[in-house]
Picture 1 (tube, rainbow, N blue to C red):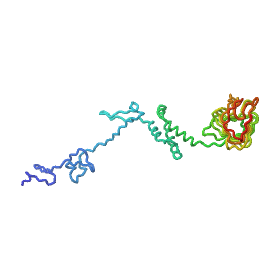
Picture 2 (picture 1 turned 60 degrees about the vertical axis):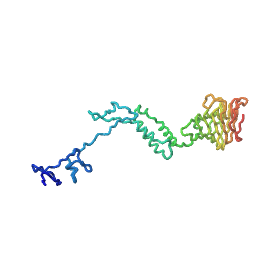
Picture 3 (picture 1 turned 90 degrees about the vertical axis):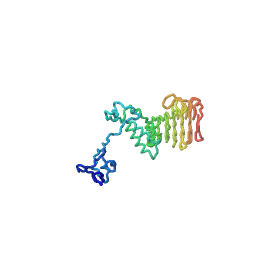
Picture 4 (picture 1 turned 120 degrees about the horizontal axis):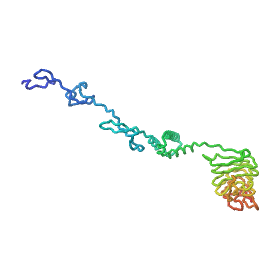
Length: 341
């Protein structure tokens, strides 16, 4: 058989029949082959034991384009000149949005807050609130107006109440501090103990609920002692005490809507009197020298030995009750108390 007319594949490179020049196979790859990813259709790279160095393909161009960041959120719903966003086009690569929302991170932190403060989470909640408030103070007025801080203030209030210091009971000598007006106190009343002797002095619960103790307290002639409407005095009596009012004042003024509770912890005695109004109850003049109320409020006596004497022409004012003939009933007056006109 003629090998020229019928060439056999010897596995070697072809030889040009006329010139005798060996013909080398050419790499047909368009993309550079890599380890584990070669072109099987290429006679060079697809051959057994082919080396990657023989590949003539071009390496793929690395895509360095960053993902498009539109910056859109509910606080920046449309791009504007300030944010600088430009979409990609045939003529331009575009530019990303530069808007950075300072509100969304704060709202996410608020959403992550617990519903209430407990002993176990108090420190964590405090740290969360501090972070939120630090970020909030960095906002401008318009941004701050878009944030609802109601959950923050609620939890902050709970923390403040939990951390409120317990105040020590206060002891007051009326000979040194004759004018005493008690108002509602944050965290509750720590207690007030009055002692000493004075010819005239004022002890007036103007608002709130106060725990008051009389311990060897003696106001001998011009006492102005009492409770304002809407307020409460929880009074504990220790040792021997005397309250003597003057003018149109009650010994202890307790008008309508005011409450005086003499506690069951009272072990002492109290003698209280007025020359014109009730011993305990209504009066024409309040301790702060405003117009008083002749009607008596709530008087509850749970302990101690109380002697109360009212005054006025023909003794028309009650020992415990109303003034000037008003017979407002006393809520409780056990056998340890004496009410005299």
